[in-house]
Structures are given as structure tokens and as C-alpha cells.
Length: 249
Image 1 (cartoon, rainbow, N blue to C red):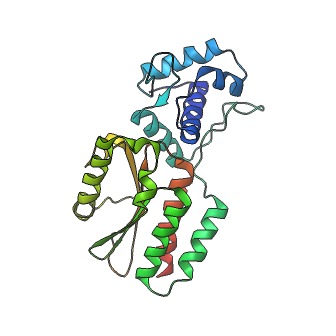
Image 2 (cartoon, rainbow, N blue to C red):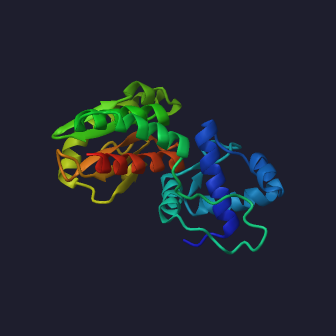
Image 3 (tube, one colour):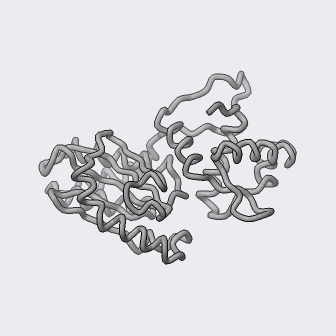
């Protein structure tokens, strides 16, 4: 899929603003951001919609990202590449890069390093991820799955729908055996919406980091949150948590 630079910028702006406001993003808001006409934005949004990257939930509403749009965005974060095609003026909108949020990372490091045992280090890291991201946190300790922050997850506006809550519950019930059997092999693994092996209709993203611990060479720590979230911050924190834990044992 070949997007123009402006289409990428508009897609990323929709994703990041939707993460903040939890309401569809309209052309007027984007026109102000990019200093172009609303008609220009609407034309570009129509192209993005034809690619399946954004959707219009209601007539006359703004647009929201689709799972495919989030996947395009996350892949851009993982690649962590910078375009040099903008000349001296630079892009109208900053393209995403996967950078560790320094203050949050420091808080995580201090809390994890103050623990005396591998078990308390993992639990502290999970609890910290809950506080820093607002998502549900998870970590494997031997053959057990430690969960924290379920109430934080379910207060998100996406989960007023009982069907979604039930789908999340099904995912959590089956997550530990799935992790053991599938054993995702990348240092950072991201499963967006329908990409999740269980609870495909739950509208969540599972972001997990694989690390070595005294319990297993395939230990995991991560978060489960709505697909609408700050992927730059969350992915960086989860990756940092895995790295800190592996180095700290």
C-alpha cells in the first residue's frame, strides 16, 4: 500500500488525536492542524477510507482508525524510520518514532530496581505499567499469569458494551495457556484487535515483551488495552520493562 506523505501524516494525526479524545476526528480539526482546506482533508480521508485504514462510524461524523490503520501506524513505529523526503521545511506533522518516554521509563526503572526478588520485580513492573498506561498489566511468573488493573481497563469508554467485556474476559481466561503454547518470539509483540488469537471482537490490543527470567527463557510482560491508545508511549514502556527485567536478574 503506497500512501503519500500527506496521507500518512493525516492517518497518524487521526490515530493520535482519537487516542486522546475518544471521539471521531473531523476534517475541520485536521484542516486547522495542517493549514489546508477542509475539502482537501476530506478528499484525503476518502482515500484513506478506500484503503481500509479509517472508517466513518456515523453519517456526517469524523473518522476513526481501523485495525488495519493501527497496524500501519504500529509498523511505522517498529521500523522507527525517518523520511528524508520533506526538504528543509520538514513534514507538516511529525511522523511517529518509537522513543522511550524518559520520565515514565525512569519511574519504572526506580520501582523495579528497588525490589529484592525476581517475583517482586515482575509484579512491580506490571503494577507500574498499569499506573503509567491506564491499561491492564500482565506478567508471567513461572506457570502463573499475574494480572493487575482490570478495573482500569474496564473504565475505558470502549467497554460500556457488555459484549466487549465478555470478549475481554474470554481472552484473559485463555491468555496464559496461549502464551505458553504460542510463545511469541519477538522482543516486542503487538496484536491489534482482530489479530488477537482469542476474543477477536473485544476491540483490544495486546502488547507484550518477551524476556529471560529465573523462571523461564520465555517470560512475558505487557499490557492489554483498547485499540485506541497511545502506542508510542505504551510500546516504549513495555519494551523497556522487558529489557529492565532481563538485565536486573
